Image (cartoon, rainbow, N blue to C red; front, side):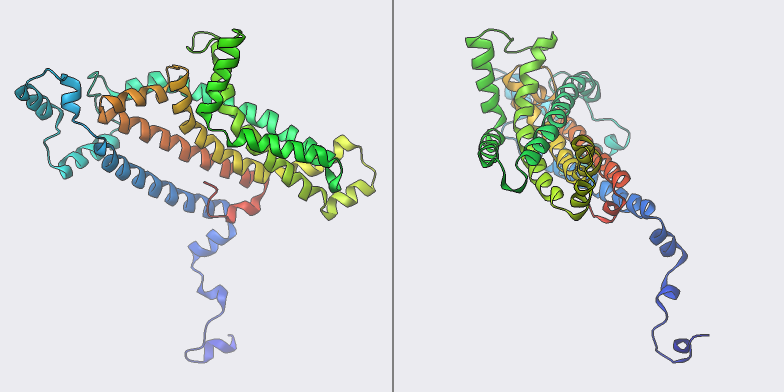
Length: 343
């Protein structure tokens, strides 16, 4: 028996305070991580559902009037409002909305009368194809380019390269996606006429939308990788590796690259989620038949169920992608499991 156990009011040993569940959590970082992220995921979904339901009806205009047309009579518009449930009290509409979500039913489109899930299922592959092609290009171009510039400019060498890279990458990273898309259309579709300006019927039609979506994030990630490379190359373990006269390729791939992946993947996860949002603008510019183009039409026609459904699906995908990035980071570096979130 310890001395503290004999003294009334004395604090007990720390280990004795821990319940079996708490001790199990502390011994399993992955279990602790899963519980924390599951709670965060549920909270994110709850906020997403509430905000989607509250914000979408604030779109100016009457959905019934938009669907019936400006020449429709007041009685016809009122009947349509009744049929669509727009005259129901807000709590009743919210409960119907949540009840449908729990059954994976996003309702029927005001405009088409078809299930929203079917419309999204037909458009989602186009948007996913665009976003994932862009992120692959970002990783394949940004990491080698940023790392190469970081190695070549180590210790203040080749300042002209460092300055030129920083300015050029910073300029393209700051360009809004619709400006980049417009410039690409003018150059490649109008002046040189080597690529189509829209559609999704061929591989060539994908090149300009993917490029417009990938240019900014590629430059942003390359700048981060270049900065991280400069920091990693000055670490003691890199000096030791260089002292052992390891070949340059092995030195940088086996010793420097793994230490760059944590920050690079964290930033990539954030960018991937933003690419889904950026695809909305890009799809509109290139008349690409994805979710982005569809949501613009849905907003114009005040198609509430379709707008809410697209936002919910894109939000869930973005949340799951951030969770996937956190899992990958945990596998690469278990110390990141203690972080609250990367999204």
